[in-house]
Image (tube, rainbow, N blue to C red; front, side, top):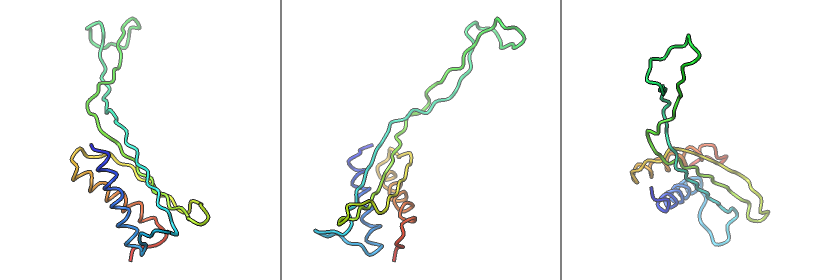
Length: 130
């Protein structure tokens, strides 16, 4: 997953949501938009019980020993986006939204996930879309 394309998609989605609410880009804006994106590589595991002595599991005796192990079955990337709106004159945070999701390895699908995540965040925004 290319985090550069994720940032581009995130900026595009935030711009679209802000413009849908009547905001527009300006050289001297009233609001600053700060966008943060973190991605973390994760490993999905499954627990597997196995014995070390080759015998069947038997609970009645205390001299039997077996361990539960974590077996990796999948790697995936989790993305978290934070959108801050800051009052430029007062330099104070006026609104913040956050979304997290498992990102697809397919760029087109990841772009759609980012669009949906940003739309979900802006659904909580106090100014509705027009």
